[in-house]
Image (tube, rainbow, N blue to C red):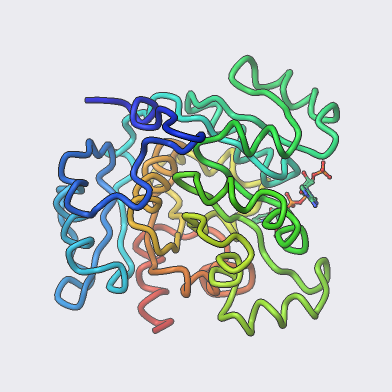
Amino acid sequence: MPSTQQLTQPGGQGTPKFLVNRPFQSLRQMPLNTKSTVVGDLTMTNHRVENGRRDFLLTIAGGIAGLAAGSSPGRVLAQPASGISISTIGAGREGGALGALFVKAGHPVMFSSRHPDTLKGLLDELGPLARAGTVAEAVEFGDVVMVVVPYTALEQIGKDYGNALAKKVLVIDVSNPIARRDGADIVKWVDDQGGAGLATAKLLPGAHIVRAFNAINYAKLPADAHRQGELVGVPIAGDDPHAIEIASTLIGEIGFDPVVIGGLAMGKYLVPGTPLGGEHTAAEIRQIVTNLH
Ligand SMILES: NC(=O)c1ccc[n+]([C@@H]2O[C@H](COP(=O)([O-])OP(=O)(O)OC[C@H]3O[C@@H](n4cnc5c(N)ncnc54)[C@H](OP(=O)(O)O)[C@@H]3O)[C@@H](O)[C@H]2O)c1
């Protein structure tokens, strides 16, 4: 089975050969290394099946508009994606902690900063798979890019790197609009767009965005990863089936249980202070989401 890395060999103009805008039927030939359970068009709500490939294809057949709360048995799906390159725009508390987990899972990670020399300590801790770069270098480096910055920074990042980010197979949006940090005006603007998921899509047009990890505290991430007993669930939201699939695989690899709660419009619930904030099991997340509708 080809690895995720093999599937992301660069094509023309740096565009990954991967499945951006790929016809849905061609996913049948695509090796899936996740059993992520994305459940629910109108006829499948909360129906859980063991075969992730079948489930995912069924979801695609049902259309992305039908995405609803699902779960992936993370302990089972954790086949390594064999070193897909990952970048973080923002390598502060949350970006640093998440990037470290991906390094530990065997992925090359470029941590970026506007002052990359400040990241030396982090690199020393993490070893050769970790590297530091400018934001531009990180955008160039990663097949997958995590955006983990104050929400106010997203507009300029979109202006500077939007075209490049739109070519990535996955942009993980971890950023939140927080009034006390970002100001009330931006929070109002985000609300007016329909919440953080749809707002990020406006700021990063064309990007294959999945919101994830938005309300799990950075300090909890190391101990939560691969937790004993039931895994910590990570609610995720996105409109692109393949980006969701890659995100689910990666989240499983670092020891969490991804739960697709719906399209980007549901991203408004993936911020601190909503019922989905904090740590929950996948079953708890599914229950919470049921009550959100
Ligand atoms: N902290 C948490 O537990 C947590 C949990 C979930 C989600 N989040 C969300 O994650 C985001 C980051 O939070 P954090 O706590 O990690 O913040 P942080 O520790 O202050 O780190 C912020 C990072 O963003 C970068 N940054 C700031 N402005 C930038 C710009 N204009 N262009 C590029 N990079 C820029 C900074 O890089 P420089 O080195 O260039 O300054 C820094 O690495 C926020 O939206 C937050 O709501 C945080």
